[in-house]
Length: 341
Image (cartoon, rainbow, N blue to C red; front, side, top):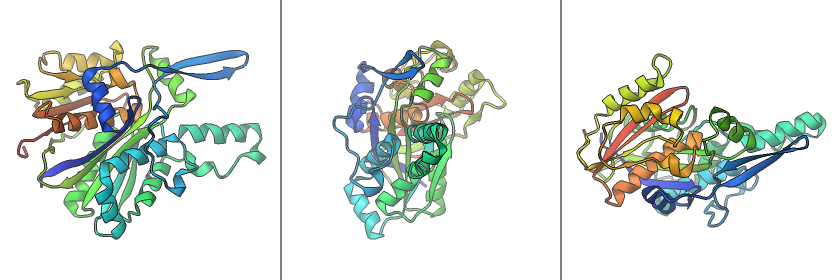
């Protein structure tokens, strides 16, 4: 079965929409960070972060989104862009069965912070309205409700490579006939706890947030999923071994026609496995995380959307996406306009 990606959506520190993402990543335009502040006793703790700009927000108007935290709003905007008005109308009419797969690492940290902060301060005053927004699958629930989908819905929790696992599950649903198409979304939101936790690994990390979505279906379309190898587990391999194995499985051709989109962030210790595994690559190469920051669960998703948009813009004939997660797996895929491999 020929699986194609026929829709994309993105929300990132570069702005709302895939056009802003492609412009920032392709040009390596620097994005000015903001500062996240919190009080710790008499000390003000300041953490530089890359946030999604408030201007230009494209979150759809939907009652359930009024009380949600940013992660659900980002995800809704990315999904709406990926599906487009025609598909949204078909889903609402019941003529198109679209599954929803949401992948995440941190989840709804803003509301978790608020709820448990209230519970610690005064358990009797902790708002029960907040609690449903603290669970990992809250965003995916809002997404299916927003489009009126009665098709399968799932949330996968993993490291930054979880988006590839989401794509794998989407392909399974499509090939099994459970859905006509599937939208895979990832999103994360900034919170002081996750931002400071990330920086404990290296002060060189730039915590960020955003969302990315792709729509997959069985179709003959310009951007096809050519290769999606099984991920390489870090339980039995070092990050370097995993990076080398996934490169071998991707079988990417360094002939000048293929664009490499890697998971390097600019932090040497994090980047070392991919830097070594792809050391001989001489073709075009993008590192979206070095521009957009480290968004954890959403980072690989933004890499994939950047690859699709580069193909659509004619910047390459094929694209290979590679990423090594923090503690679970290394994964990747090959996209292109060629026939199915």
